[in-house]
Image 1 (tube, rainbow, N blue to C red):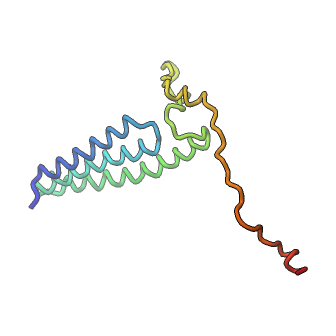
Image 2 (image 1 turned 135 degrees about the horizontal axis):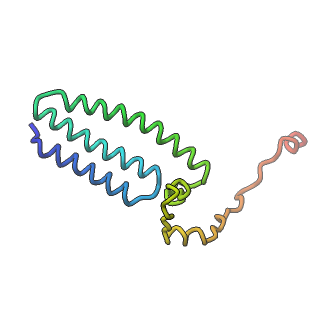
Length: 141
């Protein structure tokens, strides 16, 4: 039988990975997935304590966490789609207009540099091979 420490270490690792991902990334989808990873780390800890103590309280908390996480996933993905349609970007730093009125904007110099560059169009390759005959040309042959 696995020891309680192994489950707690696994839950702590998942929570720390989620926390680092949430703090270090600016992409909304990555931040959302990192928050879900933190929830799963907490759920593993609840399950480990529930099994170790021999009661069902931790398992009932996990069912509550999973149902809240499912609702949060639906709402968060809908918000991500709406926000992407408005700004055509998933970068959180471009949403400075959603802050409170008395707060100063947080200007990230890295983003400001990216906005000044013009993105060149991707090169296209020429069509290779023979052009297929149209139906009109094939009927006259």
